Image (tube, rainbow, N blue to C red; front, side, top):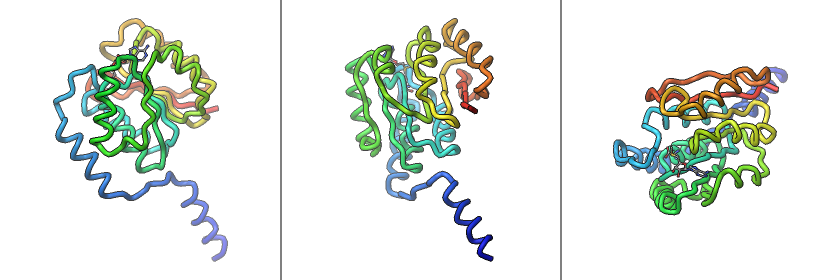
Length: 207
Ligand SMILES: C[S@@+](CC[C@H](N)C(=O)[O-])C[C@H]1O[C@@H](n2cnc3c(N)ncnc32)[C@H](O)[C@@H]1O
């Protein structure tokens, strides 16, 4: 009996924390529905935002980094999942206009308090961020994908996942070079989610 109770407590403690906040849930959902089909700044399509949300939630990730905020579509999806796991997101954008619009969108969606939105060159900021992270979404300059991965690999926790957009379509040689590299690593398991057709790679660190 005592053993069964101890096992039940351990199982609950090991499960990803899912925080119930129905009001926030409704607010984010309403924002995403309102803006659906209205994103015009290289933002991820709906299906890809859903994939990012689901990966974060499934693993219970709490320390997320996004490279390439644009106006914040993927950031809202990721932060929505983090609102349920108790996590936070750092996101980086080089374009001042997009950065400002993203901040307005985060406010409207109700997730601004979960997001540290940085304005600047991710080539430098990524190197400076101490980490650790358990989730990364790479969606800025494709020619730098491999370098972003190399800079972040030491800062990614075991069990964490590094995701990258456009590995099937529109990523060019930079995304291909990154994907070839990460697929060969013995301490990562890489899968590719088709989503909208643009493709999201999900590389999870096993040791
Ligand atoms: C594909 S868009 C990101 C879309 C965003 N993830 C979304 O779904 O809403 C890529 C963004 O990366 C930004 N970017 C490109 N190079 C960058 C760099 N070196 N540092 C920071 N941001 C960069 C671009 O200005 C652009 O807004």
